[in-house]
Image (cartoon, rainbow, N blue to C red):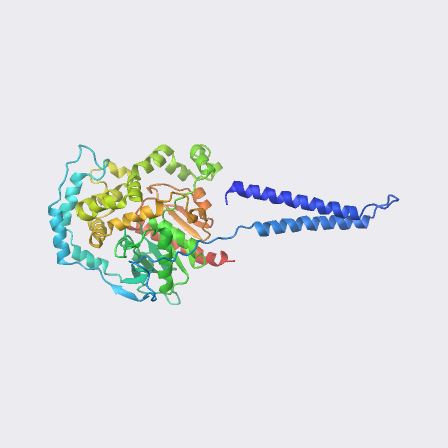
Length: 512
C-alpha cells in the first residue's frame, strides 16, 4: 500500500476514533452532570476521565491491530504446460538421471553450417558500437571450427550429476551437486541457483565448487551448500512450455515444486537476470520455506513519485533520499548512466517481448547468428566500456571455451526461440501491472551490487520492495554475469549473507 493511501486511511481512522470518543464522552458527561445545587461529584469526573483514557488507548490499539499490514503471499501457480489436454492420471514424479550427449550427426550439421556462413565486413573503427564486431566474429567461428572441442566440453558438463523430472506436464532439467565432504556435525544447506538469458545452468559451474567445498578454495567452511541449478523451462535441457502464459510466477511455482520433490522444505535461493525475478516470486509464494534470498540484481518495477524525485535531486541531496556516495557515482549523470544506457541495451528486449518467434527463426537456423547475438550481450553487459574494443573485451573476463559451451547449450537443444518467448510472457501485460510487482518481500534478503550491472538499484530503492534487507554490498568489480565472471566475489557474498541469517536466526524471526 502506497504512503499516500496509508496516510489517508490513518487520518480517517483517527477522525473516526476522535468522533467516537467525543460522542461517548458527551454521553457520560450527560449522565454525570453536576447536581442541581451546583455541586460536582469529583469521583464521577475522575471515573469519566479514566474511562475516556481507556477508550482512546483502546481505539489506538484496535487501530494498529486492524491496520497492521498482512504479509500477503503470491498464489502458487498450478498449470499444465504439456502438449494437449491434461491427462486424468497422476503425473509421474520420478527423478531420472540425465546426461548431455554429443553425436556425430550433430557435429557434422554444425560444421556444415559454420563452413557456409556468410560474413559482412564491419565498418571501420566500429568496434562493438554497432553490435558484435564482424571481423572478431570470424575469429570466433574459426576457433569454433578448428579448436573448440564440444565432446570434451560435454565431459565437463557431465562432471556434475544431471537429472530430469516431470512437473506440470513438462520435463525439468537440473544439476544437483552435493558436498564432497562435510565437517563433523555439520549439514549441507540447500541452495537453489537460477540463471537468466542469454545464460544457462553452466554459468554456475565455476562457483559451485566454492559453495559445495569452500574450505578447499580458501573460503570459510562454516556453511557448506548442496546446490541445485535448474534450467528455466524453455532454456537448455528443460522442456519448453507448449501453452501460452508461462511467466516468472509459473517458473517459481515449478521450482518450488522441484525443491519439495527433492525433500527440501527449507532452503536458500540465489539469482540474477531472470533468476532475480523467479527467486523473488518464489519468496513471495513460499516465504515460510525460503530461509533467505540472495540476488546479484535487484530491479524495482514500480516507480513512485519519490523515485522520480530522487532521480532529479539525488545527485545534489543524496542524504535526503538515502543515497550513498557509491550510489551517486554509479547513477549520475542519470541521462548517461541510466536512461541512455537502458535505451541502448533494451532493443533486444522489445523484440523478444513482442515478436520473439520471428527473429528467433534466424538464430535457430544459424549458429553464427546465434553466437553473434549472445556474445554481444556477454561483452557490453559485462562492461559498457568494452564496446570501444574490437574484440568486445570478451576474452578479458571469459575464455572462448566457456562462451561457446553456453552457446552450444542453446544450439544443440534448439531453445533460443522458447527462451526468448519468456520475455513476451512476462512483459506483454505491461510493466508494473502484475500482482507480484505490487507485493513486497519479507524474506531475509542479501544483495550483491556489481558496478557494471546494466542498471544500478540503490538500497534505498530496493528497500521498498525487499523490506528485510540484511546485507547490501557494493562489489568492487564485475557486471551482469557475476557467477561466471567473478565467482569468488559472489561466493564470498553468499557465504557471509547466509552466515548472518543463520547466526541471527532471521528466518525464524520473520515467522513470528
